[in-house]
Length: 380
Image (cartoon, rainbow, N blue to C red; front, top):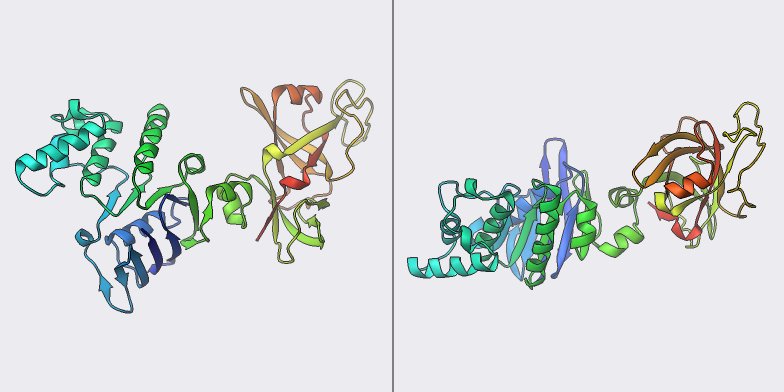
């Protein structure tokens, strides 16, 4: 069963321009708030109408602007779980689910109780939404959605309103439900960690525009664009210029880097994840403190300063050090970087012991970092 979406919709200064296709599994729509994720779901469900384009589900045309087709929501067989569940507050859990079932009262009750039992909610069937937890409310909403036997499940930030422990529990339950549903699932979120754990494929949305669908593995391992790398959690970027088949000049860092992957001619940016940057030395003065920037006295280079590797080593000034429980984040600036560049700072993360081995440099100390050629992301 395939869902195909190709739509445009203008809302004031904002334009939704989305194209994607999924033939099953879990597709995540990933993007920042206001990127058009929820509006895309509403267009698929028939709650909002695109200005132009086409939406097709399992060969059935849900919307086609050229042919003037726009099926009512009730005829689309779409299961849509809203962010806040939209349960009827004056109905019990059982009654909420029964409201979605056709047939005699006895048949409705039988089907609703079976679905609530599968969600481990039978003991709460006579309770009202206000009398059960947020997680239980969500499962009631899911049960109500599934008894309709939809051809697609769509979920809009389903875990955003829950505390971290409950979120983890429900995420695992949701995945079990999704894996037993052999039709498309579209999962909207701005949480990249959820995407990594839950989805099979990802479509990144930025300012209303969609990027090509890629596997979740590809998004995190080898994103193709600056927007995709940003949304996947990469923190370090520089404008880039190709200088050779496997070399690139990082404009904002003022250094040429060797890459493992071939450099495309249209490369515009490079990215490096914080964990892929290794601190390989720190210059200390004779008192065991970072060398003074004015005097340039390298003095005693400390135990961590073995001979430096030959490639991709940057000499940087430490700008800020943030300590976490088990790690240290150092914000550093390459000494050849552009002074006014927003991309010039580099975020380096390492465990506490590694930082201690460097002599724990403090601003404005100098450290040497190395960027692994295999970890450089080449981006448009």
